[in-house]
Image (tube, rainbow, N blue to C red; front, top):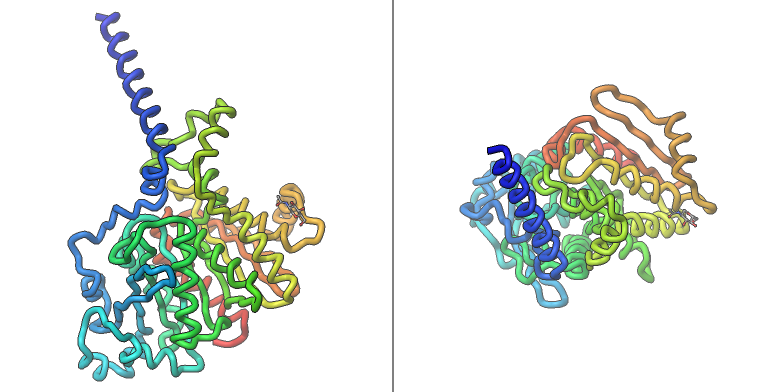
Length: 393
Ligand SMILES: *[C@@H]1O[C@H](CO)[C@@H](O)[C@H](O)[C@H]1NC(C)=O
């Protein structure tokens, strides 16, 4: 009896081990890796029509679905969401417009109101892996952003290539192209100046956000936006994979951490690096050199089981390090934190780093999980703080 139980246990362990190795093997294959990183096949809004935003709690015609084309031939499914106060002022006219996806967004009142309002602000939203513009906590997220100001703050959100109703398949280069295209559309077609554009992002979107920030600040005519908010960012993809737990419980590479050689070897298989730590440093370097005002806010909850919050402290360190000519060790930053970090009890801690041009904030919340946080007032406040710091809202 005891022997057979033991044999059974050994067999189970062997089976699990084989399954685990099989999974690791699959993950070294680019096709599977892309699907694991982007999870774009998991739409989550499967049985709901994205062209009926009322399904997701929006007012009639508050959202205009339309498409933006990239230079490499992809079509990105996009939502323009109107502020509620502005909607109220034009309620009747908006209600008489046709509903659903439009071919020519410029023909719509909502678009014209955005384009013609010199006081308009635009929040461009970059969502995380899996799902579509409407899945999970993304709609509550838009409402937390709109709550900042009822008349002048619009939200623009889109699905990357390979996600939802957008064409193509995802890749690091592809997603950056998509983000750059949408931002250029905002500046050129909607005519919103960069100083009135804030880029909000969560999870995988934070990597796209920083890549876009770096792209625009490093071009021949550097562009700096009003601010960047990163909710639940990660250091880079290899580090993420090594700390990632499937469904928040099964560590993917965790068991291999005791075998550094194998661990490093497997990390090398992560083809797309998505290095936010390098991109944030590069962005901060460039912004400091331009003496231009720049704002970065990092939000992360300690109870985030998908991406451990320690990622944020590393990203923050790389950003702060880039503000100093001779850099700053992690220990030096910890000393600075011990002196000036604000402890908000059950709400967590806040560390703000100011230079003569920039403000970099790290807010580590006690609660908020990976995505519930997006709909919380902490997000509304983070946007308000950035707009207020530019002295015009
Ligand atoms: C910190 O900044 C210094 C100076 O720019 C640089 O040499 C160093 O590599 C940076 N440290 C890290 C960890 O990036």
